[in-house]
Amino acid sequence: MASFVTEFKHLEIQLEDIISATNNFDESKVIGRGGFGKVYAGELSHSQSEEKSLVAIKRLDRRYGQGDTEFFKEIRMLSCYRHENLISLLGFCCQGGEMILIYEHASGGSLDCLLGSTDLTWTQRLRICIDAAKGLSFLHDPNGTQQRVLHCDIKSANILLDKNMTAKVSDFGLSKMGPANQQYSILITSAVGTPGYCDPLYMQMYTLTKESDVYSFGVVLFEVLCGRLCFEISNGQLKVYVPLWRKCYEENKLHEIILQDLRQQMDPSSMKTFSDIASQCLRNAREERPTMSRVVEELEIALESQEFPDLRLEVLTKYEDILMAVDPLLIYKTGKQLKELLSKGLIINEGKKWLSVNDKGEHTERIYIEACNPQSFSRYYNQEELLRHPTGDVVNSRFPGGRCYFYEIGFKARVRGEYLTPHISYTLNLVFRYKDQRDVNEYNPLRYKIDGEDETKVFMIYPSTHMREDGWFIVPLYQFTSQHTTVDLQFQFEYRRAILQVAGIEFQPSEEKVQLPVFEEYQHIVDAASQSLFYTSLYELKHILSKGIHLKDYKEWFSLNEKGQHCHMISIKDCLIPNDDFPSQYKSDEDSR
Image 1 (cartoon, one colour):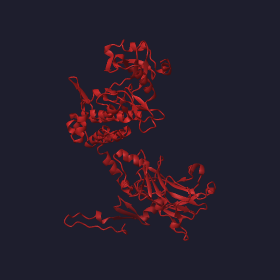
Image 2 (tube, one colour):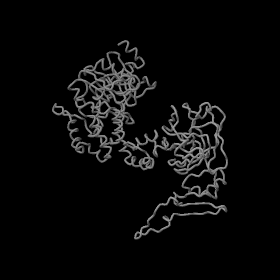
Image 3 (spheres, one colour):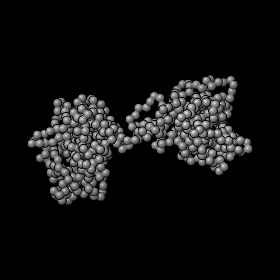
């Protein structure tokens, strides 16, 4: 006892301060009652605040069967396990024969008192369940080396709500600890828990596992769905509704038990996901019950379906072109899961490209060098001779499994980006490594020219700046602002002495905004171009226009002759007047502009 008080001295609060805060435990200060005694509201200064704040003061009454063991266990548990969805212990008092615990004040009350409330919407109920599930999941699989905790008394009365309606799991007096590094923690114990919520297998074998908590949480989920407690006492008889709820689910008759005021609010997909996971929690075989982390995932899916019923369709439409290019097909349930997959990156276009989407919705596109169709200037080499896999353990995480172009002789490469984010700046990077690592520190600049520009660019390669730890270099070749999702560029790389193994080209979103020069006479043409144009002078722009470009989503063709005269071509499809009696027939021609 003395050693315990010494260990948690920083949490100890004087009895006289508690008496003052509760007006000597006046009945007007009581905010709750239970199998432990009474809970009072009062203002106290405590370990987490030097100033007084409103707290909940639990005064244990030994007449109700809870004693020293439960009291000290709660202190030790809540001081070690801190999570936003677990109620916080602020202090304790063990003086004058009193055993008092001080918690953060949950002004929203307990969930059991709100189950039948018509003011508690379906969306709010989902959020409350997610919060509580996260708290319980943390206890089952804590971070670090802490032991796993089995709560052993999960029920709606032990789920408290703060002023923001954030749910917090409370009351750890009956909880048990087990090893965190084992798949199953089985504890043999005397009677614990509350009738109606208790795992039926516990009543048979007197063993507890984390799946026992999962069962109890499944009961809470059905309470939230049905808007009532799982039991009632009538004429001294206990009636438990869980068997009825399970039967209604199995017979597809949930409409008979769902709280009537909730029915009109529910998205059908949300309700199905919620009821499915609730039912799985109640399965007879413990090994068939889900983990609490899985429960959290399914509840979040139910919430997304409720809040954003069109989000999945919206995301699918937004990324339709990308999804069609992925092989094999992606597996996901929600728009959120799809976004997570996109953020990690996907290999598309038969393994020739890699694409990811960041938090801002900006696309990074990587193009394997073999997709750039590199053409050597030398007649002594063909493409297949120069395109081959690196030897040894040379692996490029940016272009996994791809072939490299062995660059010594000058060559041309066409770079076509297809999935860029319009109206943002990009840096176009070349990814390569030296074939002979002894050449890394020698003077050997990279010389190249962009098609349409007269100036040859010279880039100095510095290992300290451009080389990664794995030996691969990332060198910026060009910066531009994309006007469309697609862009076509051609590069001419000049002869160099040291051989490079080129893996590919990367379009990387850039923080630095790049603006093209504005020439009023041709700006309307630039704005209407179907692909982004690249130029640094009026001469370069005219050179590009003289070759011809597509306008207005490839519906028109524009070119500029030597005298500066404009030539427009419009697709015949956009010229004809539709005639329902004689519908037009079109045939594509690869030679057509």
